[in-house]
Length: 347
Figure 1 (tube, rainbow, N blue to C red):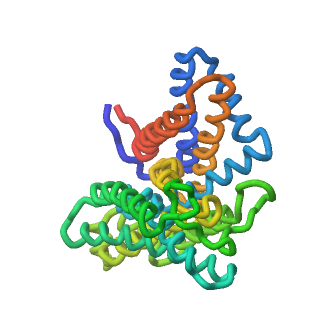
Figure 2 (figure 1 turned 90 degrees about the vertical axis):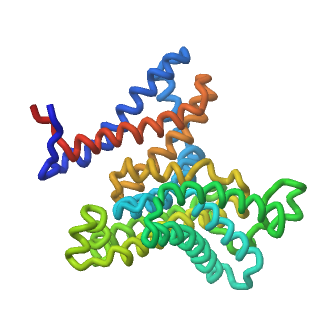
Figure 3 (figure 1 turned 45 degrees about the vertical axis):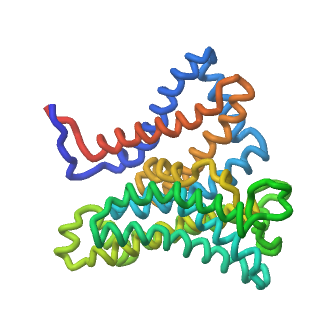
C-alpha cells in the first residue's frame, strides 16, 4: 500500500473534507462525554440549544465569531504562502493595545476616529509579524519559533503597560488599560446585545481577502510561492517581496481582530481579553482549507462549540473544557482529511 498524489482533486472531496473532519471530531469527543456518564446525544443537543436556542445565544455566537474570522483570515493568508504565522495571539494583543492607547487620547469625531484606530491596530499587528518575516528572509530563522515566542513576550508587555503608564485609575485596582473614548465604540448591530458592526467588517475583510487572493497578481504570486517556491522564483516572482507582503497582510488582519474587540466589546485591554483567539484562528483556517470564504463558516462552527459548551456544561455537568477538546480534535481530523484529499491509497 502506498500514497499517490492526486493529479486532480475532485470538488466533492474539497467540500466534504471539512464536514467529515468535524463529524469525526464529534464522534471521538462523544467517547469522552460517554466516559463522563452522560449521553452524548443529550450533550450535543444541549450544546446546539446553547448556541442557537435563543436570541441571546445567537448574538453571543456571532460576537465570538467576529475575532475568529479575522484571526482565521490572518492564518489562512500566511499559510497559503508557507509563512507559518503562529503569532496571531500576540498580534491580536498588540493591535488591541495600540487601539486603546491611541483611542484614549485621539481628538477626532467618532466617524473619523474609528477607522483611524483600526488602522493603528492593523499597523501594530503588521509590524509585529514583519520582524519574524525579515529574520526568515535575511538569516533563515524559523518563523514558527519566533512568532510563537513573541506571543508570550507581547502578553507580558501588555501586562507591563496596563500595570504602568496605561493603567486605568478608575479600575479600582483591576489590571486593565485606560478605555477608548466612548465616541469610538462600535455601534450595536442588535440592540441590547454585545453584537456590534465589527461582524460586518470581518465579513467584508473575508470578501476582500478572497478577491485579493483570487483576482490580483499579488494573490497569484502568493499561491505560487506556497505551492512551489523554486518554480515561482524561476518564473520571476520576487519571493522576499511576496513573503513580506503576506506577512504585513496577515499581521494586519490579526491586529484588526484585537482592535475590533476593543472597540466593539471590551472598551479597553486586559491580559485575559482573549480566550485564545489567535490560536483558535489556526484551527479555523485549517478547517476552511485556507479558503477565505470558508473561514467565515469555520469561525461560526468554532464559536458555536465554545458558546454551546457553556450551556451544555450547565445542563449535563460535562466540563466546558470539552469545547477545547472538540476544537483540537477537529484540527487533527482535518489534517487527516487534507491528506486523503491530496493523496489516494494505491496497492
